[in-house]
Length: 432
Ligand SMILES: [Zn+2]
Image (cartoon, rainbow, N blue to C red; front, side, top):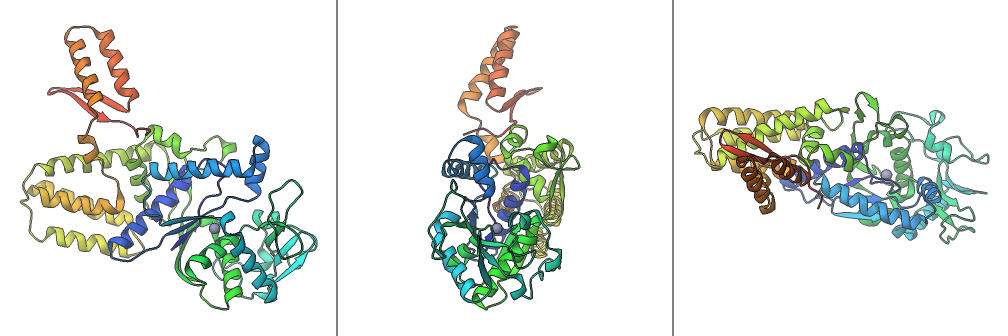
């Protein structure tokens, strides 16, 4: 399985996190079923956006892409994405890219003009078969980047771009040094790992056209084998408060910023509460709803951890069957979650213990949404703060008590005063 990875020129936002969390859940589920999944992602570490941003910042493209690649891994770790087998950088596959471009040139699918090597769309009649779009419609921001007056057809895209004097460049057998076009790195990387055909290709919805069409054209033309991939999975868009998220609209939320208000588990639950193909709206209200739902599940976990299993003996088998039926139906996570809540309701009624607990943990191997186990482990330091605050309160030193409350808060916890004494709760993701 291959999923289009990030272009490492900036911090990732919560729309990226949606895509990668949803594919993380999909891969974890496939592995849960017993499939041996090799999950590959590319890292686009050379492209126009990286060159432009590096110039703005006055650093080299390598400095920028290396920094942002590390940030990307941090972000993925922070939203508990653990399923990726391998990341491959475009610049580590220049030889494979050159080889594929050469094959396309020799096969008559590509041609050379003054500023690069281009794919000739008139030679690949099936272009548009994934999106249902056809060549004359090819007017896209991305295809416009590949604009050259010498191009044979409007939608022809660049495979190998002649570098401008101050741009990064690699030697090529084409008579000029240059850099890869956007689409070619993916097929060069996947061919290197999987060969010309593989099972699953994923990505965000906006990549269907022209990016994935271009990939199909490149690989099927180069290999003469089809289909290039068996299954295409595309994630729906994320909007923020009903609007498309964009820097210019001021509603651009990075993963880092989102995690200041919400936990990793809350974000994950929010994403998978909608089907991966569906659009989803990020708002205080929707995340708050996720938080409340998760509180119920975590409370349930604490309860059954100390309880006794008194529910119907068949309940877990039945629930597992319904759960897998939902997930088998194009990874229908909202339905699978409904099955879990139904289970919780039934167990709550009858009484549950270790078996119910273990089943929930089994589900959480796929979702990673429960925090119950973590919450039991409040750091010693925090426990000390809480004790000292309580002492100060008893002694009517409220200034000191407030200072401790602030320290607790700074550490990512909240203290609540209940009839049974102070209760500590994790309120945000702790930066490690
Ligand atoms: Zn891609």
